[in-house]
Length: 270
Image (tube, rainbow, N blue to C red; front, side, top):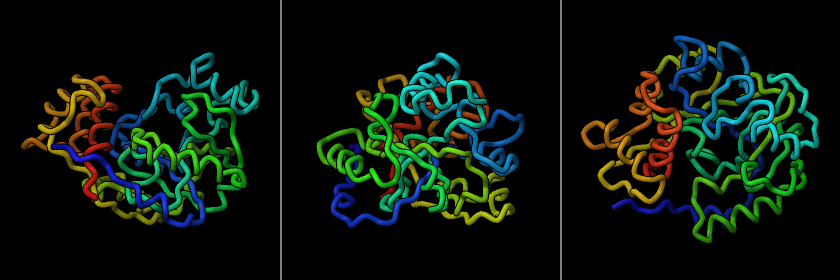
């Protein structure tokens, strides 16, 4: 029996100083052959938006005229309509430090924790921009967004959707990153070693692991559940098994994304 995720105690905690975290799948393959996502970030010295990488842990609409382009045009009042891909905002989530797994696990098993100074050039919205919220605010306007997210968290909404979306303007370089928090299965991977060699603090959260026999068909549909069961080892799925499947490039990336959602939703150890 899969137990629901419980985070109601987070709602009553006093706010911690805000930061921004950027989720990623560190050991999934990067666009550059032979490199993982985290290795690519370290090699490039920056975290690139989906317009630049052509990949995403959400929708694949980051191109001129696509949905992501249209949402950005509306949210940022045309500021980026003609901008080169590397100049576009980088997406993350507001992080108050309440959740060991980061503020927006639907976008990856690991996250880069950014330095507080990045807030000065960050805008926010709730809900996710895919749902076309009214607009964006700066750090001084966070209170109503956090209240709305807290309300969603306590009224039966999907716990993968209760993050306050963040948009970092002006790029994210390694000097903007305070550290990286990984699943324990990624602690000794080439990406982790590259991060340490670059001087980043590398930590682990409690980890994801789920018994696939108990996954419900009505969350992301029967297809992702069937894929999760095929990828499992000894009846269990973890981020390393998903990363290995992604590296083989034999599965539909969107199917893998939804299998990840199952693990993110039902596989947290705490």
